[in-house]
Length: 222
Image (tube, rainbow, N blue to C red; front, side, top):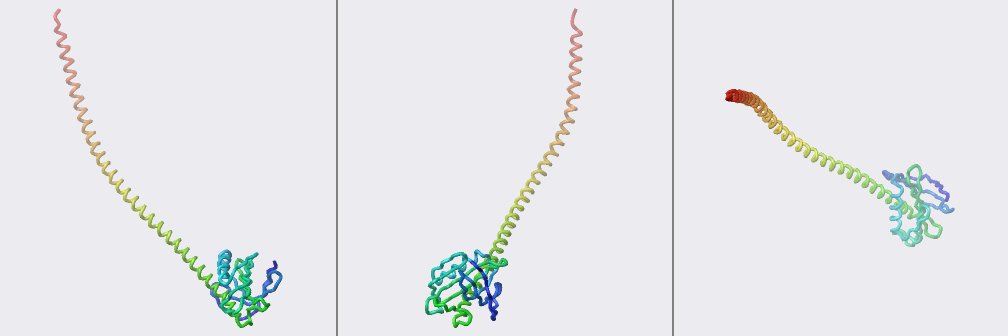
C-alpha cells in the first residue's frame, strides 16, 4: 500500500503539544482521498486504541493494515450518512493521523466544504483529548513513582528507627553485662587472693600434721 501524503498550505490551528492539522491528500488503496492530517508523539498503540474508540462513536469500524473505515457513519453535523476513512502510520517517531469524510457520492467534507471545519475539529478534539490523557497518564505515573519513593522512604525511616532502638537496647545490655563482668572480675581477683592465703594456711596445717604424725611414730616402743 503506497503511503504518500501531499499537504496543502492553509492557515492552521495551534494545537499545543501535538502537530497542527493540515488539509491533506492521501493515497489509500489506490485512491487519493481528501481530508485532514496531524501527528502526535503519543505512543502508537495508545493512538490506535483511542482512535478506534473515537471512530466507533459514529458506527461500526472496519480496520485493515492501519486503515480504519466506517461505511455508514452518523455524524452530528451531516444530515445523511457518510463514510469515514482514516489512516495511521509512523514517521520520525511520530504517529500521523489522517481523517477523510465523504458523503458516498465522491464529495469530500474537507477544506472548502461547508462542514469541513467540523471534520477538522473531530481530529483536533481527538488529539487534544489524547494529549490531555497522555499528560494525565505521565503526571499520574510521576506521582505514583513519587508516592512509591515516599512510601519506601517512610518504611526505611521506620526500619532505621527500629534498628536504632534495638541497637540502643543492645548497647544498654552490653554495658550492663560489662559492669557485671567487671564486678565478677573484681570478685574473682579477691577470691584468687583469698585462695592463695587459704592454700598457704592449709599447707602449713598439712606440714604440722605430717610433723605430728612423724613424732607419734618416732615414739613406737621396741
